[in-house]
Length: 340
Image 1: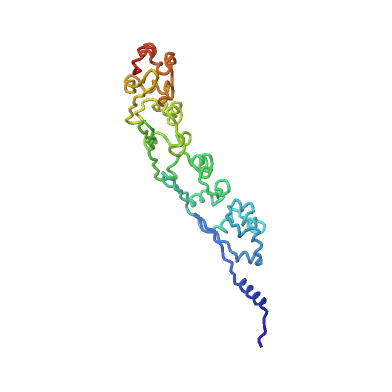
Image 2 (image 1 turned 180 degrees about the vertical axis):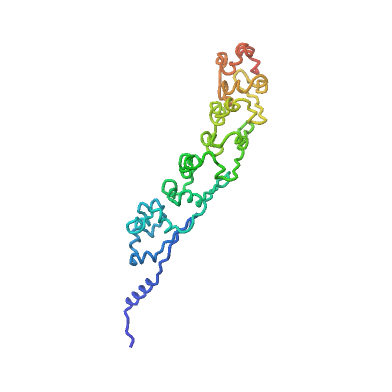
């Protein structure tokens, strides 16, 4: 005779059977430049007598999953809650890195727009550091947040610059081709409205100067960041740092040296006494650019306005048109300048 089993008992047996069939799998944490770290549920469950609550959700919240950096683990977050050197080996102990991180780390290649790739060799640096991963992975040099840094930041000691400072290793500021193999900086064209473009030749300048002579003391490692006027250059900024008439020809000298084919046009001033026309072509037969720019006039038409009274006192055109000493006086025949 068959014995009847209550329905709730059958349900209990079914749930229990399913629960026993559930398998916990290993978890693989993958990295772009290293072998994955494998967390074994089986090993840890044996250690803690199948008590899942040791970790869930006290340490790992399955409803709010996130990745932790090594710096955070060293502060007892994530795996570091147990792997602190008390319950289990410490994540902060360098000799134990290989207990989780198996295999050899791969080279890291950085792709930079406009430049050749820079490749970081883990093998050569580990050999130099005597196997010390924490020389870089210490929460200060390499933080794990994967934020890219500029060359200017490296020169201030960030990331590679922490060691490549000219003391511990070659400096990042003057040895571009040691990391960027086959690097050949291209020419830079500056397009200026109303004036022929000016071209800066890296190949020409690097025959005489090193990268550190300009970068980053004068220029950041990026073309056309912060534009400088010709007035600025005449005051020693930008190109004017070297093009000062002493180290190299002055920036306010022969404009045609940089602006090839330049031919300044006529400037028309509209006044109540009729239009006055200034001819560059006529004046450059007797004078140089430096005679007027920027000592008398800025490199922009109409920026400096002067009245006839001010000219008679030696300002603007009156610097040369000074009662017949250098040229006819502005007080002479008005029709010479104004189409009346």
